[in-house]
Image 1 (cartoon, rainbow, N blue to C red):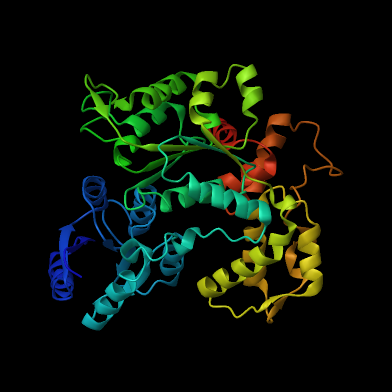
Image 2 (cartoon, helix red, strand yellow):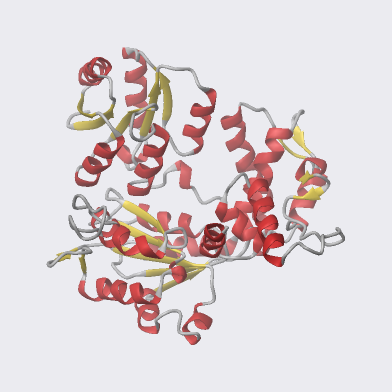
Amino acid sequence: MQDKCALLVEDNKIESAAITSLFNRAGFRLSAVSDGYAALDIISDNQYDMVISEVNLPSMSGIDLLLKIKEIDATLPVILISGDICVKDAVEAMKNGAYDFLLKPLEAETVECIISGICRTPVFSEQSPMNGKYTIVTKNDEMKRLMNYAEEISNSRASVFIHGESGTGKELFARHIHQFSTRKDKPFIAVNCAALPETLMESELFGYEKGAFTGAIARKKGKFEAADKGTILLDEISEMNYQLQSKLLRVLQEKEIDRVGGTESIPVDVRIIATTNRNIDNLMQEEKFREDLYYRLNTIPLHLPPLRERKDDISLLADYFINKYNKLENKVVKGLTEHAVIELTERPWKGNVRELENVIERAVLMCKGTFIDEKLLSLNGRLLTARPPVYMGQSVAPEVSLRELEKKVIFQTLDKTNGNRTHAADILGISVRTLRNKLNEY
């Protein structure tokens, strides 16, 4: 337990001092800041073994800080603390990857138990290279072959290009490669290229200098610098604009980046893993994706099979998600009925594993007994896997425009997915960027 250090984010000076004292007595050196933005700055430049954060911070909530920390380093344990009993906050924290949610004032025994538990996790012990949150659940032969191959190439510096439909687990495979590599103790930074507006993508990836543009009041490091010595995942790279692709190509060739507004190149040592759910050959023919970039990225290609080609995994994954949501929702569901298993196996699963997880999560929440039957796998008499109705068979007023009808369908889908844009885009059959652009138009 020597030389272990933690970061405390607490705006109350008295409570900050008390918590620091508790962790010091338990063998941890504690650095303290008073807001989330300061925490993110210091995390980017330092190595910590855990973060403890108040939920109700003045400038950024503890939940938002948790999400941003997970983007920087998904394996860094984050403990959220609060003086208020709020079940909603606790559930949201655990769903978003918090290690624990504790009520203040903290007790010495609680702190010791937390530290003991964290020190047995892979972040410290290396006995298992996989973080439980990112376990690949499979018994499928093709998936096992791909996992073995991923482990074999994990220590290479070569770029990896993971191809697969939405929801097949491309990010999981990227994390699998990272966790088996010699970079496993360094940052893993995931960047969703589809979710970032084009106007912000360059500054997010490469950072910017003070005064580079309106609002750039201080220098900011980009994702590539944050991932130095580690791995960066460029998720859905096919959504990156053509001009920025040329700058990424330079990073691959020269191993250096240029901050927006900067005059000096900055060397970076980063393993690049890219993913796509699009047909890259078609995009290259349409001149929407650079061929030279493709060949640089595609040094090691991986093609993940859709869930409909992994039918032997469906019941295994369903059981895994039942156990997951039993713990999160304090339920005691034991499993699926035989008819429910058959129903799941026969579905096309256009949204793949992500869609299956959504179906099981709802079924666990709605289950009143100990087993999920086929009736619980439906919503309003329709399976969740079905696309939302496009008002076929319904009367539409002649004055309703196609644009208004499109808007209505999009918002209905977002409502059904509880605002999850990635899932909504999958259901609608469009990219996340297209969905975002349409929402901006409305």
